Length: 366
Image 1 (tube, rainbow, N blue to C red):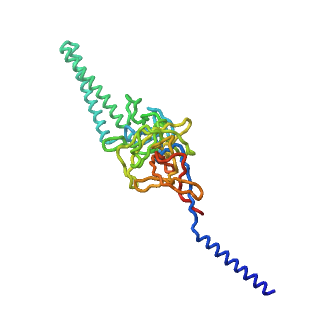
Image 2: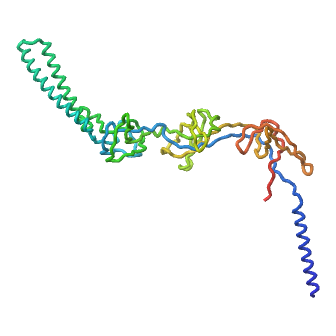
Image 3: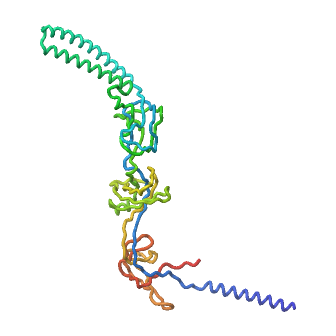
């Protein structure tokens, strides 16, 4: 019984040894190379690029005060629609003491002058009524008196403007009321009640009370690399995608290509702008990030082939055409002329037909 068991164990060990040897021998044998095979097809190829940018109004207008002072009331807020001439805020004037003193002195001097002119006029009138002076002298004194009276009114208006920002004679056009200069949507009101504001002058741009824009006239603004800008022309169609609005898509037309490059992350890029054609019923906010797809070139009804099947060596471009079948299968090197490529497919201009079979890259076994 013991001999039988030993014999069986020996046979098992022998079979395992032989099986291992056969497996290793097969693994050491060169495996036949297997390649993908492609049939050229008629089709279309387009080459496009993606430009990252943002959506913004074509024109944003900064509304500034006509006087310096303090904001006392804000009648609008960001997001409100406003018409040109509509009041956005009210400003209380903080008068400049030098200007105020000058205005008060002007009023006092004007009153002195008008009192003297009134005295002279009354005297001339009495003499004129008695026939002791000519009509010309009488009218001259009347003119002087009227001019002095008008100067009093002008001086008083000037004092009220310096002190209060508005006079009785121009109350309807008060500079204390900050009005929108255009119709549109208020994008931002960067001031609060109580903030000091200044008017625009030679040395200062002035305080922005509000930013207003027409949100029905939008543009896409982005930058494109210098390697692709040469393929752009104004009027080219673009497809805009806004990811923040569930991948909302709409069309645009390229209308501006900057003639000067700007450096960004070590690369030269050119600014582009495109007029956006908004679909109805969509409310776009200024500053939304967006991607613009631009078709740089396209061809239709051409012979196409996966680019992985095309070989490039220096100035030569070729493919391997499959000849024969089974054991007689072999590969013929064929020069071809290529055209447009989208990175996956490439145009074959000459050297290949749709009736031939082309060898692709080697199949990698997992």
